[in-house]
Length: 105
Image (tube, rainbow, N blue to C red; front, side, top):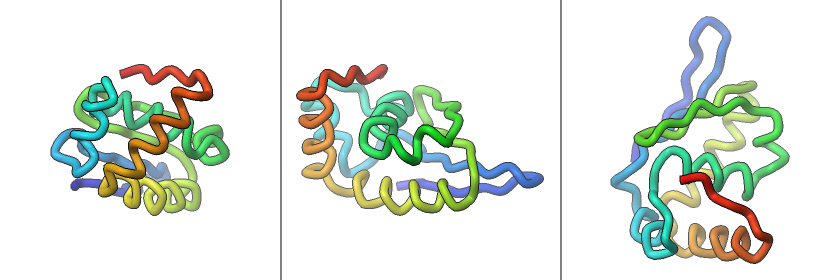
């Protein structure tokens, strides 16, 4: 698992290398691609209060969020608990599907 918080000239970003995560099999079993775009969608659904204050620059192989250090630290804590838990990912995907949320993976 590679999740990093960066500070470059006062701009803060959080990145997550997609692939090789404990939750990947659960993501794939639900019919999604465990890529950066999927994780961006999961963040937007699961933590909308944080996501609305962030900018995203995700790619197929990497999730990337840009924003304030405080928001990114909160997000890092939340995401770390999910990417290591297939059960948590399955729960979020199920809630998203019930609500009609569309993942863009």
